[in-house]
Length: 288
Image (spheres, helix red, strand yellow):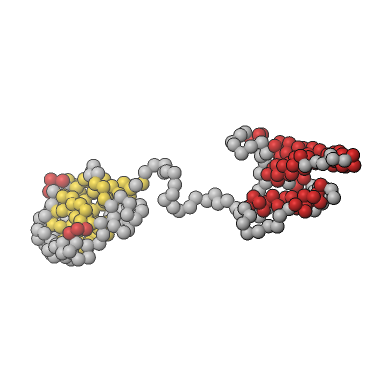
């Protein structure tokens, strides 16, 4: 019985208590023994070759020189084993040359990579998302909502024009924005004071009808700011008045959207035309 037959007969029967290493070693030994030791070691990976070397070394250690016949057979067997070891050595040497290591190295000293023929294309078009490295320049936005006034004189505390929607005051929903400036234009040259109340969401529970007394109702908690325009802020030119307000630096955050809301409350008794061209307020935002 030759070496490979002896090893084959000594192999245990696999069972469910075997580890992954046990199974790998079993498959390796049986694949080598199935060909009488003539398996193609060039197809083995580095771990397989290490296991195969252990088998070969153990085979040499188990030699039987008790008789002259055995001595002659073992010498012949040794030559076969040495030949296998030489093949294994050459294979490991080739592996080391082709795989210089897993640590980072230069291109010339790194293993080549072959991309699959069905590799998915890599997107190069920027996506519309907030996941970005940064922006070049800032974001600014002027918003001039329509203010529909009536020709009836307003009283102190009246709402002028109803609720004003400052659409897209913030660049992204729930993201803070900075109100930097206001520009008021009064086509009727009334130059009356008023207050601008700012809300983070629509004050649907407040009383905001045009030319009616303003009341918060249940929406006082929605107010996030107030800006007062006084009579002294106006400049009259050609029977028209303007009030430029700059350097406000007020940071506001909308709730659940990109919109803020404003309500103008009269601080005097102006009379405007029955149109949307008597009073204008432009809100200037710097957006994050």
